[in-house]
Amino acid sequence: MRLLVTGAAGFIGTNFVRQALEAGGTAASRVERLVAVDLLTYAGNFANLADLSADTHFRFERLDIAQRDAMEGLLREERLDTIVNFAAESHVDRSIADQAPFLHTNLHGTLALLDAARTVGGVRRFLQVSTDEVYGSIAEGRATEEWAARPSSPYAASKTAADAFVLAYATTFDVPAVITRCSNNYGPYQFPEKLIPLFVTNALDGHPLPLYGDGQNVRDWIHVSDHCAALWHVLELPGAEGGIFNVSAEDERPNRAVTDLILRLTGRPPDLVRYVTDRPGHDRRYALDAGRLRATGWRPRHGFEDGLAATVEWYRAHRPWWEGVKSGAYREYYRETYGARLRDASGAPPGTAPRS
Ligand code: DAU
Image (cartoon, rainbow, N blue to C red; front, side, top):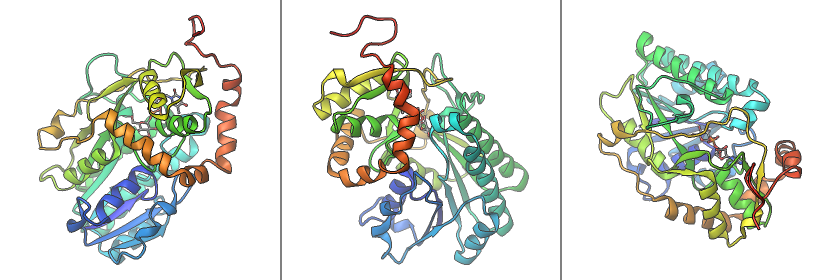
């Protein structure tokens, strides 16, 4: 494969690239060339990939995927035949505060990339990395790929719109595109704005854990390396063009249960938890049916408890990484998102007596 990986310096992109190029990596033998693109906005971190620079299979370019001509140039120059599009603004809370970057990268960026792929030709697979959030909150059962999209947040709406364009380009212009929709990821290199890395790093420092609402919203968790392995699997699946594949370990947990596990793994007391004002439009539950993908032979390898324990150890061992990421503009973001909420917080869920 001659791969273009966009959003390569973000959390999932980093894990995917490292799986490809690390010695003994699951995909190493399949990769002839890997061109990594990232705009290095707040969540992209070149340090995640810096040690790969000496690898002759690897090239890094700082680029905005919405720059259609630049993307077209790169596809031509490098004769790339496979595109994996991770590039996205991905944090729901940020999409509530400001929608513009989500429209730019998630929608216009994806469209530019599709258009570049169509113009250049020679692309054998365009993999759009999407999300279970397109299905919206799931009251009962598990969402299959046939479910209609019902996005709740501006982030989910932007990903839904991008998915629609990917399918339209597959149908109208024969771009050999596939969509994967994955559940909540956790693991190394995740930006500490998301629940697990935020709570792990706060807990390691003895800082409060701001749990939204009653803490009973449910998320469906998968280790990032299982997600990346699923993507390699889908890239090589014959006849998948125009298809959608849910990716999930089908392991759902209420946020409070995840929080309690983090407290246990970091050796911190329950009174670190603060119940704070809920996220507007907060989806109550995500749950995916990954039967279609499993039927093709893919299986997740990490159980949640073990995967989370290993993740906590990673953050413990990589303090300089996350302390660097949690400085500068992050502090301003944290103050704006949590400052007032933490001042008004309670140690007990809303409507209940405080825990003694
Ligand atoms: O489901 C896949 C999606 O998972 C991805 O498409 C998104 O890019 C990714 O951000 C994630 O979305 P969530 O909104 O589920 O993830 P987040 O880590 O922000 O929140 C997980 C749950 O934890 C959610 O119910 C909100 C809650 N939460 C989150 C934060 C950041 C809290 O209670 N407190 C917090 O401070």
